[in-house]
Length: 430
Ligand code: AMX
Image (cartoon, rainbow, N blue to C red; front, side, top):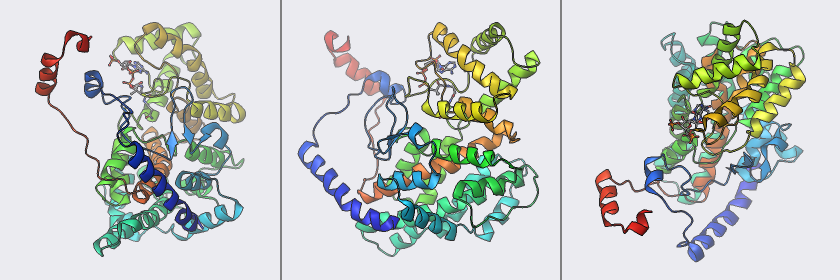
């Protein structure tokens, strides 16, 4: 049903983009300053991403719907939304769930590869290796090699997407159990939704069902974050060379593994636990304020705070905090996380460096996982990856559907910049 709906929608997307390009292709939407060229292209509008948008004053909006309004949805519903721009009705959801279930068996060679890796490999490396080693399954590559038409690219990108997304819970759970010696892999259960199945395969006791609820929420909240962040942009760029989704998603995840990006969630919890250890519990406001200043004065960032785009408290942080308040209000790590939210923005504002002193999504998630006994911080980015793969894959499908060309921005040299400065009039340089 998903493919059928896309077959109906894609001609309209193509027509719309082609007419915008034809009529307004020369309209200027962004200028680039020297500061931006040296500064990570921050704020330069130079690419299109239709799956989601992150206005600095609103936070994540998936296909027109603010993420806070999706917090009670299943990740499969959000995947359908990312791909089509519409939430599925019950029939379409059921059909997608059946598709994913049918494609969820992981090839046996993946387990052999994982088992042969060094025992101290980072879980992200294991997860990413599993994805890359499955590249031989790519139907996109197979059909490309057989000479498929450009207009069919999206069909095989979609096939790869569904095949890959379906397998990620089993791979992610296996990485957890293997890497942290939790016992043999747990077989999936057919009657469970995608995220509950993941929770089940991880192997935590979950009498109340709240751990599964947390996994559903986690998977929805991290699913996409527009196109310019490191992981999405990397995936987009690699995919634009028509490297298939296995290559492209794997590349994106290598970016997600960076400490300023997806790895930040493991650093956040580390910081909270360091505070608890130092003060033998939740500290007073004054002690926390001093400790935050100590972190800054030692030249470190306060993990979980700040954002390259957002200028408000991340709505995803709010959604996690609401979950914590409902499920674990007495938990000391959660209480500290809540207190940090009261203190750290004031400290960052006082310091005056961070453009965004508010918490991002990573400030909250670790304390919730810790509560349920998931204490292996280095694993947290894998959770992030399972979810974010949905957004990255959806972007790939949309890009192949609308014929996005190979990406090739122009770089310049510092000598060229100097020559521009020399040529500029004083008014232009002001
Ligand atoms: N603590 C201390 N200093 C901070 C800070 C924080 N949380 N956030 C920003 N700053 C500092 C920067 O280091 C920079 O200092 P510099 O001028 O000495 O280099 C200055 O404030 C200006 O930075 P910015 O423009 O506000 O941020 P950015 O766009 O360059 O970087 C980010 C954004 C997220 C990397 C940064 O805020 C940060 O390092 N935060 C902590 C790590 C973190 O939470 N990362 C998670 C991001 C979300 C994700 O991808 N998962």
